[in-house]
Length: 484
Image 1 (cartoon, rainbow, N blue to C red):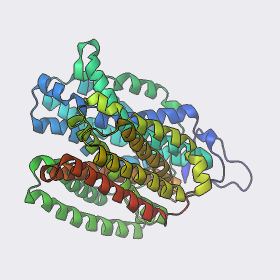
Image 2 (image 1 turned 60 degrees about the horizontal axis):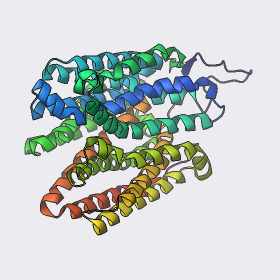
Image 3 (image 1 turned 30 degrees about the horizontal axis):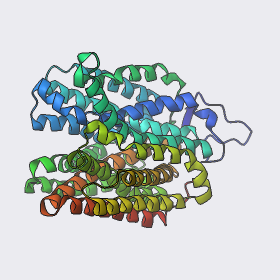
Image 4 (image 1 turned 45 degrees about the horizontal axis):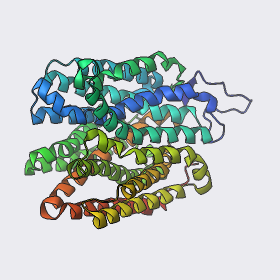
């Protein structure tokens, strides 16, 4: 059960405390202002994962940071962010999602200011680690609040906006970072990419009371064994993904995957045993066993991995061979953003007509965009038609808009409202891990192929690999349950 503080009371003598999904429109539960507030915090967390990329040279010149330190400025944020998402969702279930969102947003805003004021590279790295932890506290509360406070078409629209925020945030981060560094506002240079978070975060905090306060009636118990095993498993996997490209994939690094595998097996056994004894596991096996979540996560991994690989490899090609700067290469992604946003507006109607088959349609559209890009680059290299490149990018964005929001709904459809935070944490963790893995694998594959073959052949092979990811999503989508 979930407390719905601030929501209209349930009426009627036969009213039950937990309405099933889609029984009553819960538009009144999450107002437009409240949705904007929670999505603002989520957008900041997504933007800050990429906005710093174009400022690294300036940071290096100002703070005299070496390559390893600069890598930590980027990856340190992602490490604590991904590591804390499940725990953040669990804490929201236990202590209140609005409360955890407010604490997380406050921590994110303060640490953003510390990043902007950093006097040394070591200070900046530490602040980025804390910033990622703040993001991990607030992000799971966004989907959990939507899940607990909405139903039916209201939920579909809210999750559609969540999906748009997730995809557009990464693109906007690239564009905004280049713009801010170029403008050099008030002469503060790279510091503006962090300083901009402060007024936005403060404004969202001032309006956070408009967000409905939901939490589980029975406070979940703490699971120290599960938390420790989950932490070890995540750290080992993230270390391989983050450090592999820079360290040259040494043998000892690969051994961490074996440790992660052992940790994962021990985690599954510990969580099953705790739930069988009536305890409250960090990751409830019964929740994770729902067909919608299990199959949805299986589709989310190749979808997110392909998305991360596409953005990263495109940036390498655009800046390395098309001659675009950071701002221009981000600007060329405008068709992706425009197509994604436009299609998202109609996704609920399309989903109502097609059900889970909207994901199948999205995979077909996305695959068509990738094949078009491969064909245009192969036939037009070294000066492929910019118009056709933009069309291909637009198709990729339209396909992502058809897949993402419905996939999120499918994953969370069977999650009880009282465990919405845990379910959201699992979803976002899987998304972040897959995106990071896709970025690493896609980038490594492209650079390796480029050293053996021509640039155009490497680009076409990467696009073919991403098309295979789309085919995987398509195949899995045929067995996905209807989230409605």
